[in-house]
Length: 84
Image (cartoon, rainbow, N blue to C red; front, side):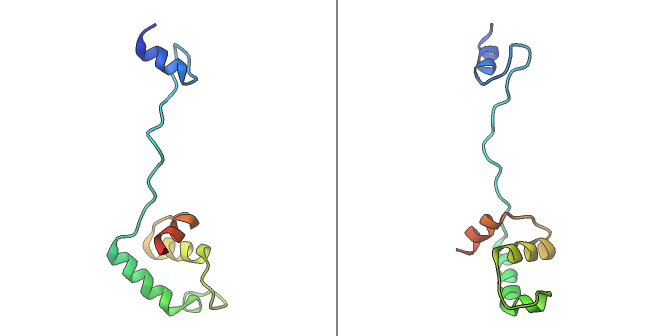
């Protein structure tokens, strides 16, 4: 068996179907500095200005706002990391 084949089988594949190697975790989309400044303005206007019934920003609401406003999908923990 060749070195390439044995490496694939060591990862859980077979000689005929070697396992795929991970290329690492996918990078989370991030907002540019300009878009982040726009987000800060949107947040300053408050949730009620965006249709929510109260004045509480949650990570889920901010995530939804980012998706609606910028067409970018971010996980809630990615939103929290961006705001820190």
